[in-house]
Image (cartoon, rainbow, N blue to C red; front, side):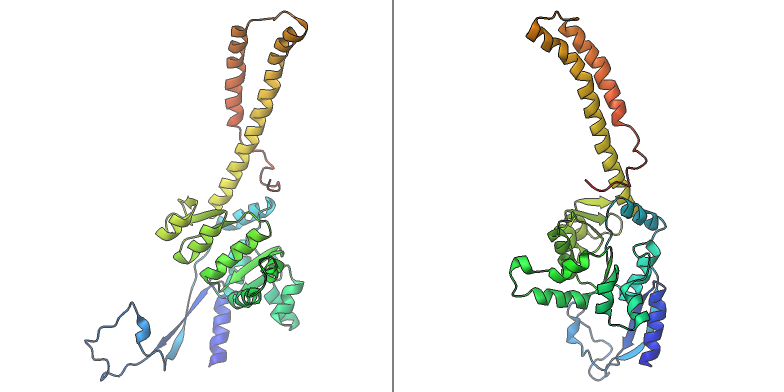
Amino acid sequence: MIAAFDKANGMFARNGERVLGFAHMLLPKSQYPPETKFNLKNPFELPFKDFVFIGLVSLIDPPKDSVPDAIDKCKSAGIKVIMVTGDQKLTATAIAKKIGIFDGKTSLDIADEEGIPHDEAIEISDAIVIDGDMLTEAAKEDEGLPENERGKRLEKWLQKSQIVFARTSPAQKLYIVAGCQKIGHVVAVTGDGVNDSPAIHQADIGISMGITGSDVAKDSADMILLDDDFASIVTGVQEGRRIFDNLKKVTAYMIALNIPELVPFLLQIIIGLPLPCNTILVLCLAVGTDIFPAIGIGFEEPEIDVMTRAPR
């Protein structure tokens, strides 16, 4: 029966479905009459033993259609997308393949095909799946070590190009963010729940969901997505790059324009050359030729390659 449930769980998970297990426990009527009131704030007062497993239920929370395209744009822009989830490894892997984080064989696939331990597959694969137990082991290895020697195992994983962390706790999410920052990454973290708030707060840019996000997550965030769409982050990156490009264009335009206006004044001071026009006329020219073209340049559309450049 355990093998049958494992097979069903694997089948659901490989389709990207979340699997819930259900069990029941019969309480003696003599000890728990119908009018018994249970303290739901402290459920551990109940005798948690002798549970009977009932079965599995799977559900699917499909990613939005815009997410795969957003992931592709992130990759082309030099932004590494790391998936951190509470789902089990098989479900997380299936979803990561659907949205484009994984584009080939993963460490799980290699371990199954070659019959080797998952730890060995991680060493030879660029697309790795790390679960919470492995993170716990890595954190235990850091205990007692000097600050500069901690996180070596996590740093080794973070060097991989495609990464998914599964079955993670809030503390482990925080551990991952701190590890990314330690190796020099600028980290943006998205999330919507209370469990995500420590990592959102630790990140360089914390991003919360505006519709489904909890109040704690919103308070911890630097930015709130009003439409709960990951693709909006990519749009924001593109807009930021457009603004930066246009600022450079405006600066270059103003320098090129003001140098010819400045040179006659310098020549008058140095060699006594008469001014071709007085100061008031120069100011009139500056108002007409500086302000309006500069505003136009500032509103230019982004260049075609704006999302294929490496981050500054």
